[in-house]
Image (cartoon, rainbow over all chains, first blue to last red; front, side, top):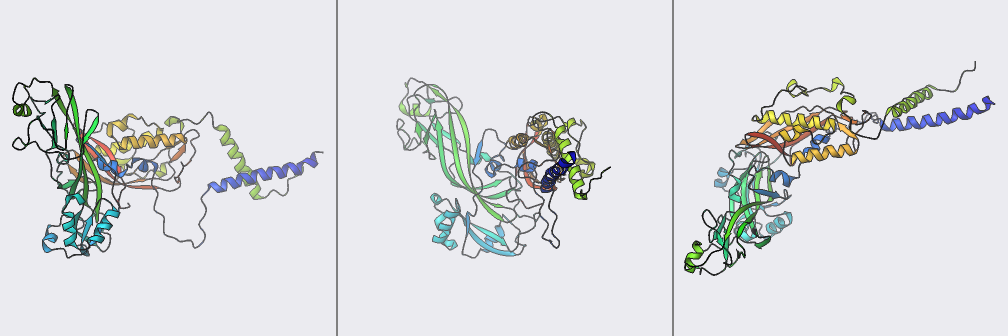
Length: 319
Length: 198
């Protein structure tokens, strides 16, 4: 009887063990076929390395060490610079600050950079030469810029000497709003309840040179896209704001574009944000474009006051 | 005595493999959980390729936190220790790192832990300061690691997490930014955006 069951048990054991071997063989790397001599694969990344990587926008934003300034960025806009025709002048070549050292083989070009690839293509198509492109971009509302650029024939090595390498950091505060108010909110003063407060940004330059300590240091320009102002739980303005001028404005008039009237005394926060389109040379051979928003908050005392003074003096200083 | 005929060499090899697999499975105990370092087999010594100054340090040598590169190396040592133990709250992480890189690595540790895996590696670093001014610095580096660094946290057996290969050494080309706050440096962010390969 035992001899009759042995062949069946032996067959079952063989099937089970064969399955185990099959599973084990799947877990082992396949041997290369003879003559399979493709290029060696790049070693992969590790979980540790992958885990370290931030979104590009976060990396850009993290470059600011000033805790009073908040920065957000949505990351680099791909292909946001398009070529326009023109011969780069000798002066521009001499003043060239960014990108690859022109001693690397290549050619001079002009690039029109805008907020994104579609916009850059549209602008470059409509203004295909440097003269018309610069005239178009001179209008700040178009939020674009034309830059000279050395296009290398071949990608240069990573450690190539970069002209204009960032050797200083110009500071983020120049790119954040600087709050001005009437009545003035700063030391010893405050704005007034039930009285129109004018709000404006004291730094009004639409275009500024910029140097950032990221991506090995980048230099270029920043184009102001918009300001936003927020207080008392609401956004009340999306502009630079008009500077109060006692020679031109009546004291009790509200601001034509950026103003707020507080109803209750207390300490309030006015948070100003400024969004820039940053266009910079990034070593070794890129021009990159990304938006960047910088915000600062200002502590504003709001006072109740008996208006015993003339209205003009009340605008300047509460009693 | 009857002898079994018809059992080939492959059959005997299959038997050995099958019995070994059964024994290993029987030795695992309890639900998947992070085990302490002493319960997991140590790395084979032949994978250690780091220069002495970058070798995994078991000493308690204090790190000069005013020294940028010292903090940079200490950060990656802290990351190695945290990944090896599967502990996203390893105290050295916050001592040498800040957000967003701190939160990013902590999330990665948790992701591996959910799969029951730890990574025990020893990175070879070759940092190059590409920019430093005031309280900001940027370092270019190629983090190289050996093969076979992913382990099952319970059994200690080699096991790769989803999307990773356990049979190849690793390379990560990074730009890493650091900030100085209160006199001490902190590693704060990393990118591989446009970074040329190692």
